[in-house]
Image (cartoon, rainbow, N blue to C red):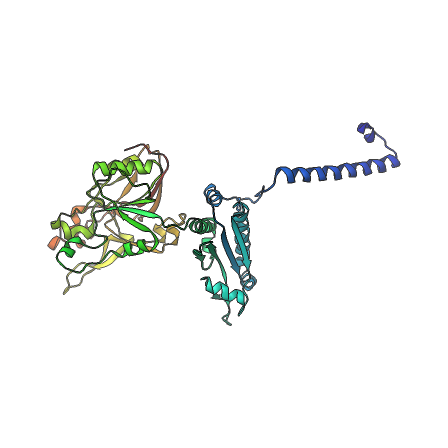
Length: 431
């Protein structure tokens, strides 16, 4: 049949009816053919047509999901009453449910999502409580509602988001991916520590038979990680180390720095604390303790400089201290001791955004080197009421103490913020 004949210039009514019937038949055949092709060629394909691509998973998330070996179960609890009372939570709940669906679809059958709607005094509510979810009352009746995720793996390791809050909606994918990663890889990460600080207690005090305790941060770390102490003169970072933490590594050798350099260049991660004036070491100088540490070669290769013999001062975030004596109190704002609040913390970083406040003392000043090949992301930044202060001023007062009133008298704000903590990523040359 010549289809061109169907579209004559002046078809008769009978021809028009016939043409319409054939056209409908062809459309039906085309519709079926497209569906058959779609089923055969696009199995598992999903399209995200939202404006901001809300449901397109990040490459890192896809990697996490593709590497699940043993099944992981995520149990999602949402009280319908919460959505009815507060519509904003209903919208967020739909986002969570859709995101969990994306996780499930991209996990090659290794991730199972179970959905529950807890009612008061029900078995489902009891299960939510047993799994560590937080019930929150939303009315005068005090009946709790639930909105969280509890995850488990085949060896009964557990991870929980006790209550999903809209404030962390932009980090939803990160939080869920972190949970899945922890359950898919339950083995504790190993942190290698290189330090001159008495993190595990003061050895000199131990030798004198005096009581000493580990720093609290070490107790926290040992609760979540396996800790291995590394020498500052190591030839190579051991293969089992997941993260190297350098905490005031004042005595690290060139050989040790080379080992860290090679470890990082091969994709290793480092958490680095360097200090132009370590106040905790000031009282230990007679025992050979250094009050300053600097990894200039490494930092420069990574794209940053730390100001030499300078610390950051910030009048806007200064702690209130006694600038006098025990018998004669003189209240004063000490710019070198800073209370860094959320305005100073990078709220776009998923980790920093969870912190309300960080107290810092005599913090070093970091600047990005010109021509750096790495990306430098500020994590903690002082206010514009900041000033670089010489470290010698921190011990020129009576008894080697800082001359707080003198520092305040000579204080001249530089009207710019200063980076005191950064995240470094990207390609770098060897140091």
